[in-house]
Length: 394
Image 1 (cartoon, rainbow, N blue to C red):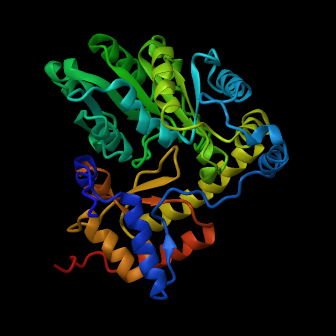
Image 2: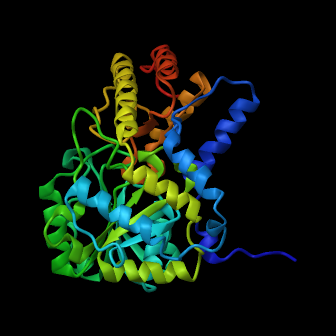
């Protein structure tokens, strides 16, 4: 039997991070000492008290049965309490929170809940590829909102034609931003709320990096803005905050109708998150937050080493206030893929071409601070050893 792929699968580009993993494996197989600055997967360990809670909870036979589709009530209460402490936002845990198998799963399923075939979603670019792919899977169309340096890597809402805005059902935003490291302020969120209210658009804010901030900066929640809860939902993950990427635990909060619709999709697709993992998540949210502050200090040190080295190499990236990414401009005459290829072939450093996140990302590469300070120093030495004034080979 020959399996013919569905049209939605044939339309998919190679998944960006899967391709990076393949290239990395090829280099390692050839004996290259690879420094992987490509994928944003924390190298730091999950805090011990979270691991201990998982081990304890996994021994409880009550946790071996199917979990609740929408998540354990205890976990959702912890989410609501964490939101109250962190952002001053008062949430109803039973109607305004939903447990996710990592925030990526929720982001991917939201368009299935709110987009009909032919509906339009406003999608930033460069951006996490899931926003556009999930819309396509739901049969929707996308309108690109370019994130440009001159606009602080914020979408220009005034550049969206009224006829386009009237067609839109969903808008994705993401701050602190992956891949650019940009941040958003209250004024921007207020403008987003007014825009969404005017055109009856659901806002999906991906806030996975809200706790990865530096130099005393603390990102705000979109839901802190008056009216935001009427028009939006916010997605969080324990992956980056608590170094739990492999655990697959996140949550969505906000507009109760959107939360209910997403929950309805999930109840027909998955069977929820292992309860022992949710108990560990409760330990993370309710427990000592000192490991989060320690994480910030580690990434601050790594950021400063890499920024200083890139400046020495003549590349001069902006210094991010949040995320663990450096959005580095390419040398003159180099495309994103040219520079990525040069770093791979000449230095063994894996980075991500900015163009892989969307056409407006051309002219940049993304570097992740997910290796030790010592390895970042080594990467800097290798980059500074390159002749970046020499044009790329055609």
